[in-house]
Each structure stands twice: as C-alpha cells, then as structure tokens.
Amino acid sequence: MKKIIFILFISFTITNCIAVKSKKTTIVSPIKTENTIEEFKRPKLMVGVIVDQMRYDYLIKFSSKYGNNGFKRLLQNGYNLENVHYNYIPTYTAVGHTSIYTGTTPTNHGIISNNWYDKYEKEYIYCVDDSRYETVGAKTGGQKSPYRMLTTTITDQLRLAQNMNGKSIGISIKDRSAILPAGHTANAAYWFEGGDEGKFISSTFYMNELPEWVKEFNNNGKANNYLNGTWDTFYDINTYTETLPDNNNYEGLFNGKTTPTFPYNLAELRKLNGNYSLLKAIPFGNSIVTDFAEATIKGEKLGSSNFTDFLAISYSSTDYVGHQFGVDAKELEDTYIRMDKEIERLLQILDTEVGAENYTLFLTADHAAVEVPAYLNSLKIPGGYFNDDEFKTTLNKITLERFNSTELIENISNYQIYLNKEKIKALKLDVNHVSQVIADEILNINNVYKTVTGHTLQTTNFDLGVLQTLQNGYNQKFSGDILFVPNPTTISYDKTGSTHGSGYSYDTHVPLIFYGSGIKKGQSDNYYPIIDIAPTITSFLKITQANGNTGKPIIEVLK
Ligand code: ZN
Ligand code: ZN
Image 1 (tube, rainbow, N blue to C red):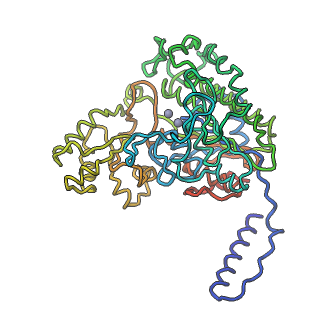
Image 2 (cartoon, helix red, strand yellow; image 1 turned 45 degrees about the horizontal axis):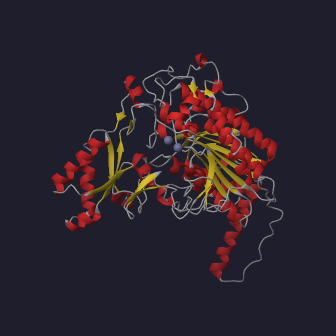
Image 3 (cartoon, rainbow, N blue to C red; image 1 turned 30 degrees about the vertical axis):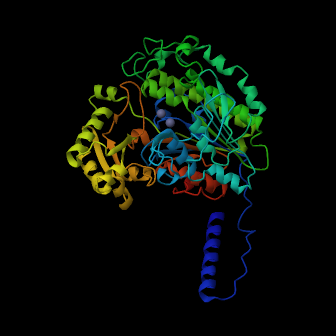
C-alpha cells in the first residue's frame, strides 16, 4: 500500500512539474512527504557471496548431502531465483564478478575477459594488473588495481551514498575476485598469495601496510594446518552416488599422483604442486576464505557502525577443482559438500558478530561450467575439442588466398581475431571488407558454429540468441574485429577437467539466492539476467544505480 501511495505521489509531482513548465506559471509548493514515506533503514552489513564456477544444478544434485544450515538455510528462508543466466560471452571469472557488481556487461564496463589483447599497447594484458602500485604483505603478487573496470560498482555507490562512510572490502583466493567486486573506492581488497608465501596480501592502491589483524591472521599457521593434513571425502565415498567412479579418464592429476583418487596426502603433494598454491586447488582454500571473512568482520568491526558496510566474498577453490577434475567427479561432489559447511559457518559468524536481523546477503556464481566433452562423447552427445593450431593455420591460408598476405592477423584470443590495421592500410585494403571475408570463410572451419564482425555488432541490434550474447560481451574499443563461437560443448581445453566461457546454458545458468533483512521468502522460475543483481541491491538500499547499469531491479525478492 505504501508503495502505491509513493508512486502516485511521484506521478502527481511529475505531472505538476510538467504543468509548471509548459504554462510557465509559479512553482507550486512541494507536497509534504512525512505521511507517505516511512523512514528507511538500511541493514548494517551487505554480504555478496560468489561461488566460483557453481552450476545452478549443484543446489539440487547434491541436496541430499547438504545439512539444514548451509545452502538449505538460504533456500528455505531466502528468495531463490531458479532461472538466472549470464547474458554475454565470454563467461569468465573477471567478467562475471564485474557484471554482478556493476549491473552491466563488457560492452559498458570494459572487463572483456580475464586476459585480453590490448590493441593499443599491442600486448596481452591481465584485467587487474597495474604496475603503478606495489605489493603489500609479500614480495610479489600485489601490483593490482581495478582501473580497467570503467564503470562504478554497487560497493562504490554505497560508499558515495554515505558520503564515503561505511566500509567496502573484497576478499578471495583470486586477486581479480577480490578487487573488482570491492570497486574503485574500496577500503581494502585482500587475496591469497600462494607459492612460498601462503598469505593474504593487498596492493598500495588500497594501503601502505597490512592492518595488524591481517598480519596476525597470516601468522596464525592456518594455511599450514590445512596443508599438513589429508583431503579425504567428508562422508563415506560409497555414498557419493551422484558422480562418476573416483578413478575415471576425465580427471586431471596432481603432480606426484598416478590416479585421480582419494585420499590426497597434502603434506606430500604440496612439495610438487607449488607449496601454498596447492591450497587454492582443494576445498580447504574455501575454508581459509571463511576464516579470513571472520577475521575481517572482527578486525574491521563490520556491521557495527551507523553506516552500512559491504563485504564482498568470493570462494575460488570450487573453480580450481572443477577445472582439474570436471563437473562429474567425486572430488567436485566432496568440494560442494564442504562448500555447504562453509556457508553454514559463514552464516553462523554473521549471526554472532552482526546479528541475524542486521545483514542482507546474496549468493550467486561468476559462471557455471561444461561437462567434460570427452565424457559427453562417450554418451553419444556431440561436442569435443577446438583445435587452436589448426584454426590458425587455416586462417593464414585464407588470408593468403584472398589477400595475398599472411600478416593480416595480429592476435587471436578469447575466440576473437584482431586484425593488423597498419598492414591492411599499407595494402590499401578496407578493414570492414577484410573482416567480412574472414568471418564468412572461417565459418567453414571444423567446430566453428557462428561468426560475426565487430562492424556488424556496431551497426545491428540483436535482441535474441547467441548474437545477442556476443553483442553484450562486445566492447567497441577493446574487442576484436571478428568474433566466432565454437559448437556447443566444444572447448579449447585439455581432454580432462571442465571449463567455461561460452554463452551456452551449461555456462550461463547459475544459482541466485537473496537472504536476510528485507528479503522475502520464496522462489521463482522467472528469467533474470545476471546484470539484474546490482540494481536489485541499489533499489533495496535506496541508493543511486552503478553508473553503467543496464539491469532492472528484481522486485519480487524485496519486502
Ligand atoms: Zn570463475
Ligand atoms: Zn574457471
């Protein structure tokens, strides 16, 4: 009822304003608002939880193994959106985290991949590298910032809305997954440096020295404790009936193992698998992120001031496990059973430290993942492996035949072709013509499903299907001249393990649950694109949308 009154008030005021303008009469006095709008109180803490590479179906598939206080607590007491998809290509980690927090796609936010070819600098770059800054807390790994992200995040908008009060902090195993969600105005972002360091570190972009509580955390021996034990299944492995046999042909091996099978002797394996870097690739990498989240909440007293703080957490080890073992492995199943325990622990920490009524949380994923194509082939499902070398050779043949040159291609990456503009100019060729000829010709190459030129994406508006998702991922300044899409379930990857990056549903369909203060209980099958999360949060907090926002608030989840 209050909402209806509010809308009427707005439309009445707008009508009045228009009337005032057109008639050029004196301005009417504003209508009093005290009786129509209740004073709004934001929760003390916003928590964003991203589970890297979590497919939507894991909520269902492993449900019988989950406890009542982890994922199920969110599902039963929060609002579960069952048909949420990424609406752009490529579905990679940096792009996913950025799109969740900016409410828009690479077209606007500029993070077109994890790594991409910078056609101005003529080099391959990494999304959060920034040599202007130094590592804080270790020797290397911290020369980072979010400067390549061109738009603001909801974490930025919350800081701006509160006159730079309230804290926004990002934490993750991966640097990009801590830095991009925390935004440009973050108080801090922390990520885990592996190798011989085994610490959470940061960048001089945020601070000159780690706070005492981070130093204490790094000295508490937790990383070693996790790595000096064994990774065995949480429950009896014979009850893991949802996944393939422990020893199968579709899983990758750790160095020093001859079969991809439990148990994993971590004290032995760390010697041959990058020492502390091994922690990233096992479920205990998620455990140390929960430990660090607890230390952050306590150390920074999040949720205890008169302003709203934002903690952006990203769990990365789920992604490492999926890449190595594939989405149908016992290791993957065990990782999600343990992930459920981490969610349970995180909620308990929030209840204790902040109070159950004082926080609002969302949980989603930065992308999903494909079933191992070799496994699908064994079931007669089409798909397979994209041959990059064969593609390059054929492409050179095409340019030689059609334009009498093998120097027209400057770079091929992320299924995009960057042309050598200087060479094309020198040969007095037309860039758009060369692009179109190449796009038409490469469609004949094995496993190429669709092609389109950048020029077409600039001049045509696609509102459906693969071309629309390509268009949403296309950035006029940074993307390539020709874009192509491999066949469904066809990946440029090893024959073991899973990956992601496509616009097909196996990569785009992710969980999304809102939970906590101000959130309704319920579930829905309505379709929402991932970019709707950010405007839902800004609507909920009654703050200005992120400055590149193209999403719409998901009204049905809000009380
Ligand atoms: Zn990811
Ligand atoms: Zn990944």
